[in-house]
Length: 386
Ligand SMILES: [Zn+2]
Image 1 (tube, protein in one colour):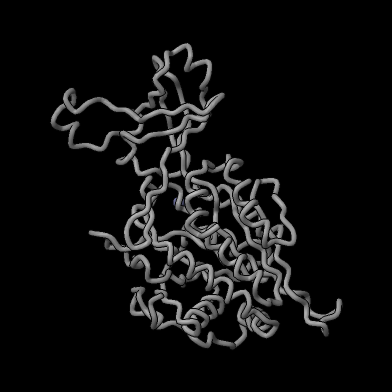
Image 2 (image 1 turned 120 degrees about the vertical axis):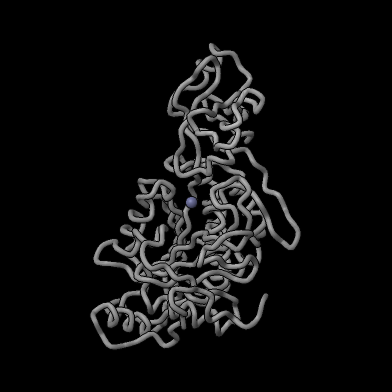
């Protein structure tokens, strides 16, 4: 299946943080052809191992085979039933929805069986002029499944989950729009990397991971799967803001012009430098995205697992984050998959030694440190747009 087909399949599946079972079997199906082993952690994250090819001279007592982890998170933001009021369903959220765009959404209520519904609100005719100007708070919204109160009560209870019902939509220029692209587009990048790596020779063991429970902020899926793997290097892939009208976001990366390669204290400088070096060598376009503190991604948790894991972060440019019309360029996903694969192939014992030297206060400096202008991103862009 193509990256587009996987994007559609994963986007249209449901899997709110903590309840990823529906999407999990699809991701396992995607990883399976390219994995030597697949396991699922107690939390529910998927770990697919593609073993490296050992050099014949490498004996058991030599340096262990390097382990590299590449991940995206497969959970999505969603809603949760709080109470039933005259047959209408009140709800709260799991993760941070854009409340402004909730009214009029089509949803699926995951009760005893899946029920189609819509999010309703009071009509504008009955609102005061002031009320019409305001964002409708979530507490004033409700879900209508068209059933009477006794029937709804028999099928739905507090704690049941609600997901947005949205088919992926193709736009011009190989763009697509839909829900849960945050962060299933990263899972597509990881699938793409694993597919490419299955045709390449690599010395390191590659752990492709689809993590659970990113969206409510404690990164529990990533922290626990990274602990289980104990990798030498970990790369997180997550969405970041793409350019669109009136965004002053400094890290905004244009769609279909590659990706962001993140830098900042959350990112190991040598891992960043190696990613930049590979992008330059392969003429894969990118921007440097600068984060002065927490990146707000799984990279934040992965970096501090065990005694510390050298971590990198790739940003997927995405418009309209946390809405049901998140928009991205499919070409960006393919390019990120290629960069991840080439990065894994490039890892050797020497790089890992350098990595340890840097962490131990050694003097090695990144070879290709990116040039950044006072807090701005947008540097070191690749030369050719693919
Ligand atoms: Zn998110």
